[in-house]
Image (cartoon, rainbow over all chains, first blue to last red; front, side):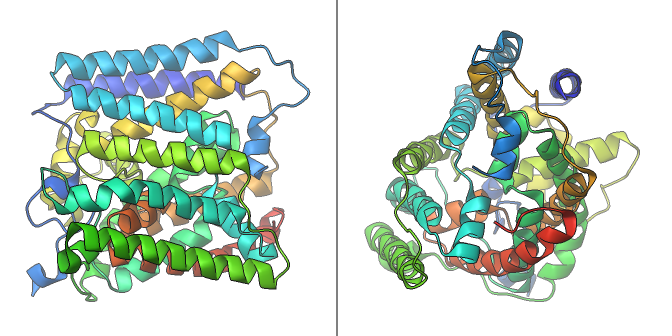
Length: 51
Length: 382
């Protein structure tokens, strides 16, 4: 299990770094709730907005 | 001790720190902080550090929503459940008024409808099979439980599947979020939230007493609840919204799926502004991912500081199968039901949003089913 953890840690951390360096980063960290019309932590719209 | 926690502990092993597994997560946390600070984002670094502290606190207090709910339902013992309500009360003291006053902060809200109820119910089944909720999966996986690595993997898969199904469930209908502070103002909203927590605690204590079970939380749980509540406030102040866990899993899964050639751009969920941005931009610009990474690293460092890391044997196949099924159900349920014990229950109730209580009741009902299913996988009922 220890070896599995070592591998998962290295691969996971490398993936985080690769994603960060390879993706745009337009400013401060945000939650989907920060966007207009969001009605839930995942950014889903409000029921009233769909009617 | 929970099953997951017992998988982390190695009582017969020496108590020497496992330095490589202490140093690696500490260095990783420092590197993540450095990367976001280079981008000029001190709040992002604060979220990583808050997550790290949460991982340490959860592991040291062995704070488990899942085991606490199971003990309450099976034996009536309510100490863990009452400690969770204390945690939410501590967070609510700041979150309800600050979110209501504006100031650039917002509460955790969600629509009330079939999506919330179905998602929370399925999540409840999953948490008893997976043996941990969102936060529990993070800290036990980080703490060295290989079983919970399996839960986390399938949690991620389930949340991506759930993201594809969420628009269908939203189309079934529902009503807009109901927030106490919208009707009663910041302080009235806080008062109603605290009264609702006290009323729930009273009912739970009465049920425990009637069943002849203990309802006094241990000192460790009380201290853990206060510390975790304070850290949830720190995450709220740093991120601008209550602490959430599972959206990060959906983003990770979405990025992996895209890497594997799946095109998510046509899916309705991934066209909403928040998810669309999260999929396209660096994972270090998503608030829930930042605290999730910190939490895994914090639990890893704390576990390795106490004893040799990840020395336990892999559990039986049935237990691993339960971890996979539980993870899938939790991931799907969290996306359909707008979060887990943290994002929906803690965040919702601590924001004064009615959906937090609806989520709690539906997830508790799901737990009764999950507990009945546990023996099928060779897991103990309690």
